[in-house]
Length: 520
Image (cartoon, rainbow, N blue to C red; front, side):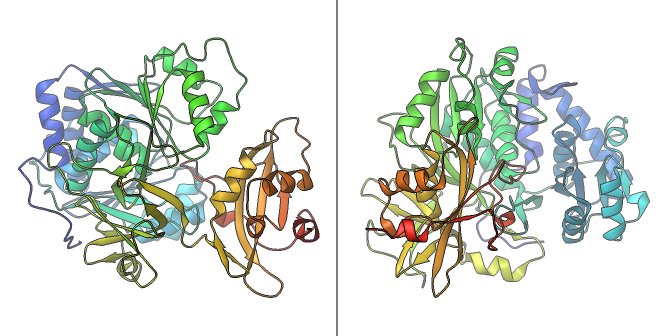
């Protein structure tokens, strides 16, 4: 399906079934997966996924065929992943809560031989729109509860195994193709980056149809020979009680989950939980970071990854915390240095040391490409290097500092700035629950900044007060021209702000602060 120059010749055992075989052989009775209504040991997963692989083969699914999984977080999703890996098929997970039009678009992209999921009105409408016959839509529980002979293992390290939808935070989702080897590298790397071992119990409420839960929580648990608690969704109200109920020692934070947890009313037992470490793509200012660690009695490890590669950056486990940075390049605990970086200008030429530029990564866990999108793939993959589209700078010690997305950069009066700078200033106000800043057309030239703001409960902060707050923290050219108060921000299933859904059109609800912003 893809010719991926990033896949290197490594030792045998670089497929997902071989990873499972080693784990199940060493610990067949150890609990691997806990859901609301099921529990699987490593031995159970090996046996039942083999049976599901037989059911897929009986349904006509063969090597290279796609299987769309329209499923929530559940045991059947996990069984399907390992079953597809066994026969060399490709799992294409889609959001079961997406509207029919979005589902249809993803199904047309994937072109699945089989669709597995509950036959909801949205899924049935989507399959009709995508011209998928009704007999190719099967019930997950029925598929996964039979007793079928496991077919011989047919997957190879370079075979495409998953098509992970991008978050869709800034544009329509694309299907990111990853090989079996890429997933194994994630499984082996994550425990080393976060400090996990077989005594740990991970938890995730994040959806398996996106990269964080799939690559880090699910496969990271297997790589550590640990256990995973799989929740159907994130609930700030129940979160810490669930960590106690399931004796959880590790979880991941992304998007605004950390801020939501901090904004919950304090309880006397907040720090009385079994969690010892949290991996976080949410990188708050040092004061907020320390507040979270102190209140909840745990350690935060900051990291940066993408749907396109699990090998981004991470804070080292030992030594002083490098606040403000996204860490150093992640490497493999046994293979050593396999991850490399370049920081380049718009012409892909290296920038001066310490200067800002676009981050490019090269490692064997880089995606094979965007499925069915050759032009989009060529735009971001050049000679094995992944153009992340993220602007960073690196200090003399190899620590990277995130500045912003190149496509999000706002250009005003000859100056460039990143929305995240304005968002961090706004979010630090006690009257703000969350904010999102986007570029909007300016009346004459360049762009203006518009802030969408969700007030904290009982807050009556005004736009002028927020502008004054930002004035003490930002250069004048970075101050937002428009502020619009809204009840909530649109979110992707992976808890990122869906900025693409925020309207750039002028409206009566927004407040134009230009005369106030430019006052002496």
